[in-house]
Length: 159
Image (cartoon, rainbow, N blue to C red; front, side, top):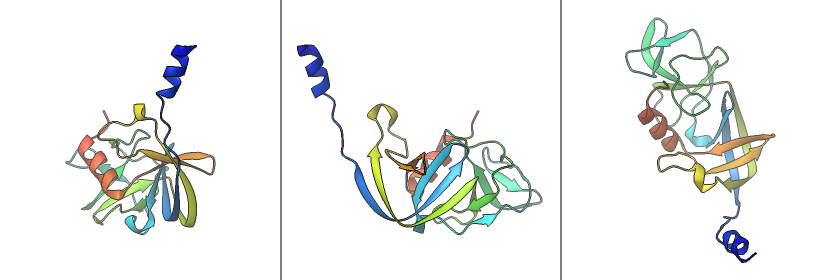
């Protein structure tokens, strides 16, 4: 009995964090990310077929290589192609020349969220998320545009 009490007392639980503000819920397959609204550009429809470019994981619109695009897997890695259900595009951060392809994009105005910490075992040093919220029956991971861009664009294409 003494041994179980010691094990239980060693577990630390961080309290949830109350957040209020404007966010954008971005979905790609079963990946749901929640970014501050001011860090996500205006949404537009993907107007054409994306194809591989000379840079691994970056895509271009067929016949137009002036803008690059990315499509994420559910593990937050770059896909070598854009799934057909990814028809929404938005910039993330300050780079309007890089479009991020999403299945769904929802703007959440003045929403109250209760952020929960991810278990430490799931957080690696380069992981761009360390909190999640439950929203509309889904888990959505909180992250900033900079964290997402740094993680995705330095991790390379999915193999």
